[in-house]
Length: 99
Image (cartoon, one colour):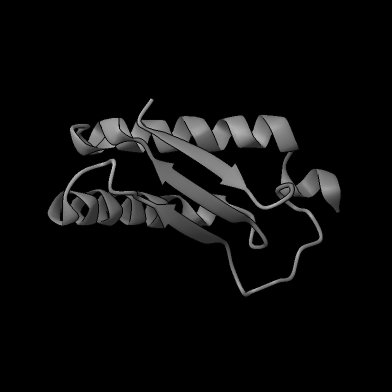
């Protein structure tokens, strides 16, 4: 695994609404130098934008890159984000279950 995914409360939880799903990225110096961290951040941001239509509008996610993300391919990162998001859905339920 190259990253961890955290959610604010639960997906669908009554949190302050900010107009759409939001994702924060945490790419620490442990991942690599500034160029490497920026590359990982750009990849993760692009992956999140591809998933945005499937994420509930009130979701707030934090994607934390682990040091292994520096050497992971784009496909590996995309697979990790997808798997982590599905794990969050299983753990916290879908938006429809909380309405």
